[in-house]
Amino acid sequence: MQLSIKEQNSINWLLFSLIALDVVLAIAAFFFPDFWCEIFHGTDYLETYGLLRRTAAIWLAFALFQTIALFKWRQNYLWLVIVAGLRLSEVFSDWAYLAFSDTATWFAWGTLLLSPPSNIFFGWYLFKKANILKST
Image 1 (cartoon, rainbow, N blue to C red):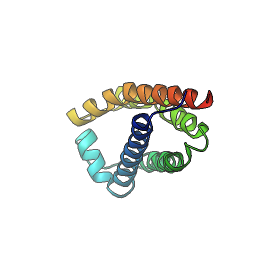
Image 2: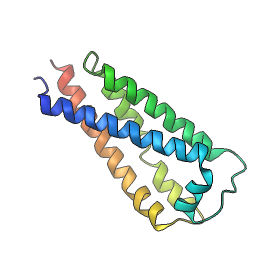
Image 3: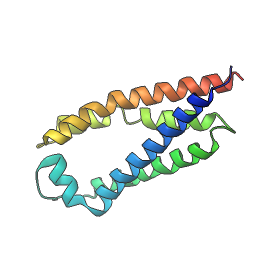
């Protein structure tokens, strides 16, 4: 079974959206940590260990692999599997972030509660499409 043009376009749209999301997150965390802390915690940026910028580097890695996948998944379905694995690796991190954070804004609660189910769906969807491609 092959993927329809609509399914191919939905994969491309999803990959592009995930790239944009991770680039925006990385830029905010790297270059605007005060803004990050304000919208997620309602506090000033006080971090001394560099963990926010470490996380930004992870998001840049996600964006890199998702960009490669955007251009390569038609030649090799395994790129969809790689991105699915990346998204699934984030399933517990945002809820842990909320659980252990001393402060969280309404924006943090809204986005961080939604992120894990979204990543589960994205991972499942990409695995499903990769399995279809594998069988062709």
